[in-house]
Length: 98
Length: 362
Image 1 (cartoon, rainbow over the protein chains, first blue to last red):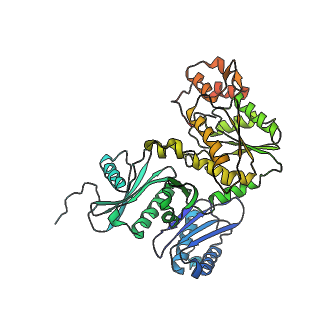
Image 2: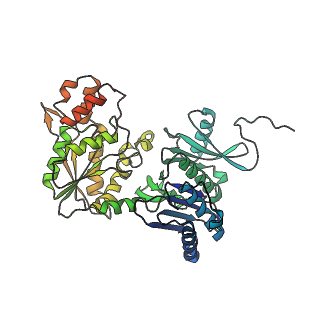
């Protein structure tokens, strides 16, 4: 899936996260993660973000995550929503998202 | 029981509700916003296109405004303060900006509030201690910009830079560029990108491009939001408080010294003396302080003020060309501008005479 425009998903509220995606000129993935629980869960958050992007087939784009202590399932859902919006995807293959 | 109609068209409940207004079309609510802002030592700023308002029942408890991609007038009622309301408010304004096509946001705030906005995904770009900080909503904004600029770095001991609006490009601009290029190992030339001038950015850039084509050791760059833009040059921010002189150029010049100049290795900034435009003259004076003398971790940059070239004893300036256009005195313009500019004036702008668009006239 290709990110073709800037998009947002989520909020800055506690236990949620705000995900911003944007297209990039170079064909590479740039992931920036900020989290209130970076020290404890930073590695796990990055793992969830990377896995979710891989499942969606996203190999290029800028992904910025402002995490407020969200659970893994919330992180997955927000990443999916932001990418689908940014990819301007109308046809969603739900089975790939699980 | 049927509830009475509410004055603001929103249902009364104890739940926090957010909605948007155009302050120019809702004077009654704008007055309430003004009251809330005054409780927070803020003024209502002109130019805000849309506000997000938060109400609990009838009480207005939070507001945040947007002018293009600049977040302004963010306030929460003292009795409702707490991370939760403010973070909801900021989420609302960020989504609203996105819907309106603004992904990259800027925000001005007092330095004491920087840590709060850092919690909302904003990052500090520059600070005038005790007065104001400029923040942007991405951790990779100016860093990414400087990385891309750095790819255009050139070797040399004396690396010059000029930032010009070229509204429109005159023989004076050409003289300044030629002179600066002849004194440097390399010259980086930027054209102000903000499209608020009489001449469109596209036209201004094209004229500069043609006008400097034969000058060696020069790179022509597109301007960016990080130099002389609506975001970096917030004169509106201080106008009412009489602080125009103190801060409005400081943010822009700090960004240049701390980020842009180091990325390109710039050692000298060239600028023409300004006989007419007070804003530009002030900018030139402030440049000497903020680029050369102000305490900073970044190396000082020498400011070289070049006396303007003259035509029949009068300094050539773009503002003079615009004045001649307005007065219909087109014949005289031929002596002040290169042929390409003249052709554009005759072809496209002669009969278009909108109100003077100000801005930096250099």
